[in-house]
Structure formats: structure tokens, C-alpha cells
Amino acid sequence: MLSDILIQLIVFLLPTQLGLHFWPSFARVQGVKVDYLSPTIYAIDLVILSLIILNIVPILRYLKNNLLTVIVFISFVIINIIFSLSPLNSLSWWIHSILYLLFFITLRIKKINWKQVRKPLLISIMVVVAIEIIQLCLQSSLGGIMYYLGERAFSASTSGLGRLNLLGLEVIRPMSIFSHPNSLAGYLLTVFYLFHKKDSKSWYQLIPFLGILLTFSKSATICLALLVFNIRPDILIYLSLLLTFVQPLIPNLTTSWQPVSDRLLYFSYLKKIVAENYLTGTGLGNFIPSLGNFLPGSYLTPSILQPIHNLLYLAMTEIGILGTILVTISLFKKNVRKIILNPQIIGLIGILLFTGAFDHYSWTLPQNKLIFFFALAIMI
Image 1 (cartoon, helix red, strand yellow):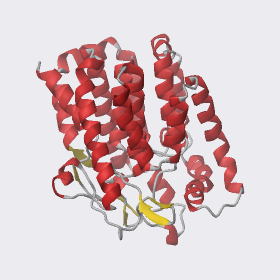
Image 2 (cartoon, one colour; image 1 turned 90 degrees about the vertical axis):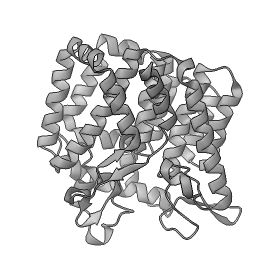
Image 3 (cartoon, helix red, strand yellow; image 1 turned 120 degrees about the vertical axis):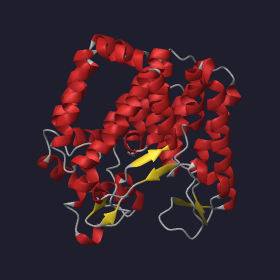
């Protein structure tokens, strides 16, 4: 009973990002503080940890039944940390990743069903989109109690925000309680897919649908359109892989469009980073410190010190050839293959890869990682 209550609470809190941030030396690159590298204890982490502790006996039983997989995984984690560019930074990232994996395992053990979590998810999304709409109208954050949901304070004069030109007016793209409009769009896209596949009430889908459009995220909007027109999920994956594979070739072209040129910058350093860390990778969470070793001094700013905007390249860079091989082998395991051949799972993976072809939030931000694990647990 208590586990069910905690699961519903976690589902409601999934979009929040209230947390306690720490700033050790490894959270800086050449002296510059980088948000992505700051170890953080999120409020939702404590609730997830409580759920795991409450179900520790069945979790340990599950891990014992999959002992070989657990041994291989832990062995790789240790190797990835030891040979990482910043072991303490990698350790911090792995702790969070393992916590979220245990959360996924707990959901699978509890065999949660859609009816159990639909209502808290719906209420949560209604709050998120309502905040987004008000931010768009005010062109600023709401402040007050929204801080405790994780809203970041901003106004029309705040630098570094996502903006667009709308009918001659410069408009701040709303991000609700997320750190960026694109992250919000990716989260809402996964929620839309859940409602689209698991519920017959169309107005449930309308809420995340509207929220996605108001983020003005191009990749999420295109993906949304493909979902609405019921494109085959495998085609979505093939398109995502094609877009991913051609991107390293694009830096040979010149462009004056800043959103594109900013993203292409990272590909010019990708080969150098991979060449130095090809076997075990830079270590989880260490793309940015590695990038900082190659950037000229004038580029060492928070706006440039970011992960490469491509999920697959970022993942392969941080886990290396060894991690990539292990992931590939696991995909061919009979039980895993049975799961990923489910059309609904293929669609979920398609969303992950398509948005990941243009951004990194599904690898770097807790809200987007958690909603994916949650959706995966529901879809299986």
C-alpha cells in the first residue's frame, strides 16, 4: 500500500527539479562553473530512494536472478569510473544512473498498471502546461511557490534564454519548471505518446500536445507530427539514425543560422575527444571536461561548455567502445529482444532517438531520463 502511494507521488513529482546543488572542484572546467557537473540531490531522489528501500528484498532477489548481468554491469561501471577523465564526476553520475535503474526495476517488480498512475500523471502535466502558458504570457517566471517545483527565475532581460522571432516580436520560449524549453518538449512528447497509446480519451492527449507546440521546439514538433500521422515506429528510428550519421559531415558546410552553427561546433572537437578516450570513454558525465581541454580560452564559457547535441554520440563518447559493445550485445539477448520488438516500445525508442538526434537532454537531465524509464516500465 505504501509503495503504491510512493509511486503515485513520484509520478506527480517527475517534472520537478528542486534540488540541493554542490560545487566541488570537479564541477568546474578551467575554473568555469558548469551546471551539468554539479552533483545534486533532488527532492524526487529521496522519494525514489524510499521506494527502493521499501522494496529492497524483491529487488535483491531480482538482481540475484540476473547475477551475471549485474556483475558485468558493475565491472564496467568500475572501469568507466577508474579510467574516466574525472573519476569523482563519473561516480556522481553513476550513482544517479543506478538510482534510476533501480527505480525502473522496482516499477517492473511492482507490475504497475496504467490506471494506477494515469491520474497523478495527468494532474502533473496540467500543472506543468499551465505554468508554461502563464510564463509565455508574462514573458517571465512566476516565482513564489513555483521555486519549490524547480522553476528557474528569469525575465525578459535574462541572458542565455531560448528566444524566437514571432511576427517581428522577440519572444522568450517558456520552459515551465524545466531547465530548457527543449527538455520540456521532450518530456511532454513522451507523455503524449503514453496517453496516445494507453488511453482513449483524446483530451488527455490535447494537454501535452498544446504544451509541445508552445515550447516552439522544432525537433519535438516534427516528431509530434509524425506520431499524429501514425508513421511506422521503425521508420522513425531509421530516420533518426540517418540524421545522426550525417551530422559529423555537416561541419564542412558554413551556416549563419546560430542554432545550427552552435551545435555544429561540438562535432569539430568530437574526433579529438574520441581519439583520446576511445576504449573506455571519457567516463560518464565527462564530455564537457574533455571538451574543455580542447577549446580555446575565449570559448570557455557556460553557454559553450555543454554536451554535444546528439544522444548517441554523447553516449558512445562517455562509455567508449567497451560500453558500446556491451550495450549492443545486451540488445541481442532473447528477453531484451522480445521487449524491444514490441511496437509500442519501438515507438518509444523512436522518440528517444529522434529528439536525441538534435539534443542531449535524454542523457543529461533527470526529468527526461525518469520519464523514459517510467514510460518503458508502463509499456513493457
